[in-house]
Length: 195
Image (cartoon, rainbow, N blue to C red; front, side, top):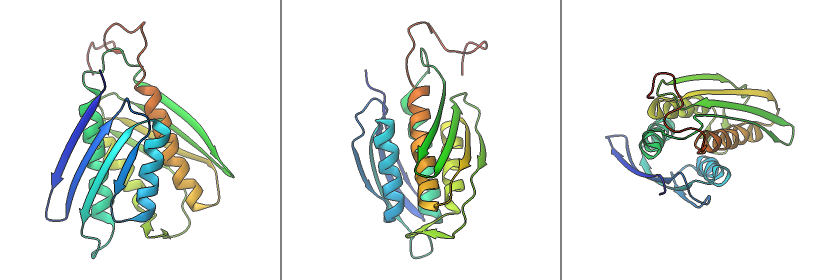
């Protein structure tokens, strides 16, 4: 049985339709109105082997903030819904991902308790039409929407495009590993008995 979710969210600032299949093949259909953000979400889907459809109509005449943050909220909610009761999954995932001169660490726990620890040093205000300060806001929104403990740490890197892309790819790989089933885990991997 594939783990899927569809979440729609409409506010005065954004109208978002998102579908995710956590047991997909990496197929993506992304249209947020922000080219670089589309590229990052495509990378997330491809490297996590998630099927992802995202359509966003946002108030880009204001700036990119609402579009990116709200997409993070919806993606987090969709991940949480698709994961379900978490029975049998590894729960923890990690990845140290190289991309040219960049080395990015991502570790996460699908604990049900949201937290973001973010240590990424971006040195330019924009990459393409994407505001780089929104990387933090996006991952913060995802972590809280999904109820996950998420750590992102830049170990090396100079090129801002590489740094951001490595963060999205490392997140995808870490999430994919946390979602894996382990036949030794009969219930939920927690001394509490639930997450």
